Structures are given as C-alpha cells and as structure tokens.
Image (cartoon, rainbow, N blue to C red; front, side):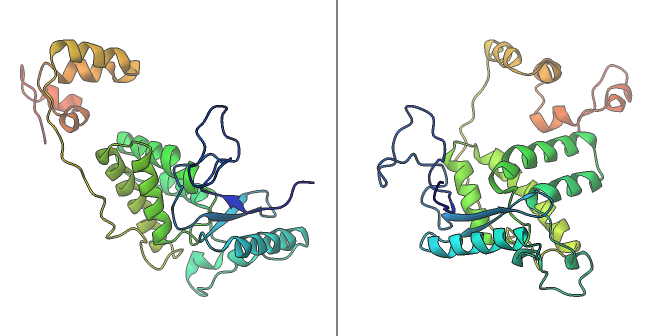
Length: 256
C-alpha cells in the first residue's frame, strides 16, 4: 500500500516522459507553483464524493498530513469535517456548508445578468484558468497569499498581462458576490496589483490579417474581416450590434 502523503503543489505527481528535473529536488519535476509559500495540500472527499482541499505552508507538511487524515477519518465515520463548520453563525447562507470554488463558479455564472458575450468570457476565464488551479478548495479557505501564488503561476506559464488582468477582474467580481452571499468577510484579492510590462505597438500588414483569420475559430473569423477594413479596435468590434449598422444608412456607428 502506498504511503499516505499530502499533495505536493511544487512537483508533478504524474510527469510526462522527458520533462526536466527540478534543480532543487532531484528526481522530481517542478510545477508552475514551485517556490510558492503554500506547498502542501490536504485532500479528501466529502460525504457526497466532492473533492475538498486545504493548502499549508512549505514547512508544514506534517500538519497538512495530520489534517488530511483527520478529514478523511471524519467522513468515514460520518462526522462533520472541520472546514464544513461555519464560524459565522447567523450570516444567512454562511451557516450552510461553504461551497468549493468550482461549485461557486457555476452559482455565480448562473446568476449573472448581462450580455451573453460577457457571460461567455467570464465562464471561459473561470472554468479554464481558476477551476483547474483552485476549484477543489473551499471558497472560504483560499487566502490572499494563495491568490497571489495563483496569479504568479499564470505569469510563469506565459500568460499575457492583459489576459491575466482579465482573469483577475472576473475572479474579483465573483468573490465580491461571495461577500454579498455571506461566505466571505471581504474580497481577498481587492487591492492586489499585477505588474504590467510595457506594450510594444505592432502594425499588422494585410498578410498578418489573413494569417490571423486562418488561425481563429470559424465563429470569430468574421470578426477579423469585419473589423480590420474599418480599423476597429478589439473592444469596438466585439461591441458592434445590428442597430449600430442600421441607425444611419451607409455608415457604421462605433462606441468606444
């Protein structure tokens, strides 16, 4: 039987053949989270089979292991694991078992009112970037430092500053809603500043436009051919509606 261990967020559990070894820990393959403060993760499944997790600092491996064992034992014995006990009595929904981030993402998206395109963007950012990294963690267990590590990981994986800022904006909107629902005392990423490197302007030639349209999903190809001849910026092209094209015959109304 394999020895029980907490999950090591610094190193891959199933590395691909040929991946370079960690320079600090021979025989292991580093993850983008390598070097972050919260290295160890206690993992267990609740009575409904949902994955739960809590992160611990790099020097607290044994604490993470003990916590993991206590949680698994509690579930096996039918007791209430510690993270499911709310410390905020009388706070509406906070009296219920707090959801995981993955669960709350779906709650947030289902209640969002706005343009369909905005909802699609929010859904992509949260499901594609936030859920894989933090989805199994309880909403009220992820601290400010964990989110800093998350944003650093996105940067280390080569994410553009603008894309990362968009992920932060969407995540912040979700966490603010969680505050209103009583799950959090405050937005843990409010005030976090993400450094932005200088942007270099590049003028696209017609050859670049053709190449760009060929690489896009067919749904978005028309957007390039519609926007490029009119020299529309990305935000202007995405925001165009039929009424903008029909309000003045022969002219296109553009709103910044």
